[in-house]
Image 1 (spheres, rainbow, N blue to C red):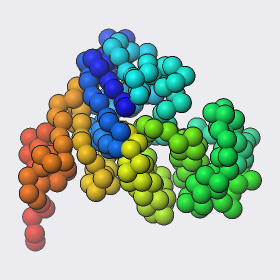
Image 2: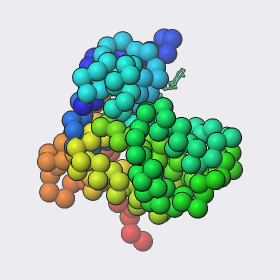
Image 3: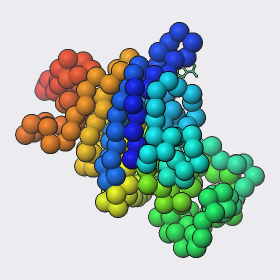
Image 4: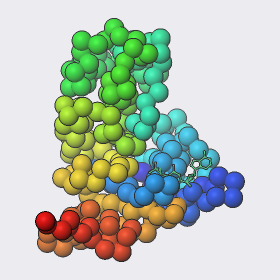
Length: 239
Ligand SMILES: Nc1ncnc2c1ncn2[C@@H]1O[C@H](COP(=O)(O)OP(=O)(O)OP(=O)(O)O)[C@@H](O)[C@H]1O
């Protein structure tokens, strides 16, 4: 569903993404891990059609800048961008009109209820806390029932209820056959759900790890530190 082939993105002389290839199929949750500056956000923004790049990215077989691809893809950015003078509900109405959705109201109500925003429908974007803005951003991205969703640090800023709901929704989307690409630094937040992990360093994918490849007792965190620091995390010495 999400297909990245030989993608390179340069900022001037800096190669932020160096000949990357990855594919996320329907019903698959792919995690993107890597230290700060590894190139994860650049990849995500490129997938979502926000940056120009060399190579090819398709969504459901459509070139990622096309209207067809945009119809299939949902994007939850690291920093939510809301319209300050639109209410919470008007954001959803706006998305419904932009995507020409029909009978979207029940789904909107369900999403708002899940994220405890049902009593905030008339609040303006500028009146919302950072976490509430993040929740509205999630609701807007999921309203059109996308077939692929890209999340950039989705859990940062959410309260415990929001984190739980978003994790439940991610599992549900995966079960429904949606392709999910999630960039995060909170490795343990993905431990239950992931299928494949791409570990990035210095603009390259340095390891592709499928869940079934893990040894008994090995965690995703072990794999991450093994690749990025050359060893699994050490336990703190006991006093
Ligand atoms: N707009 C930009 N102009 C120039 N360089 C940029 C720009 N955006 C990112 N970079 C550089 O590209 C590289 C990759 O950055 P990117 O934000 O993709 O990394 P990241 O893995 O998402 O990092 P983090 O975990 O800190 O969010 C870094 O060296 C960064 O300084």
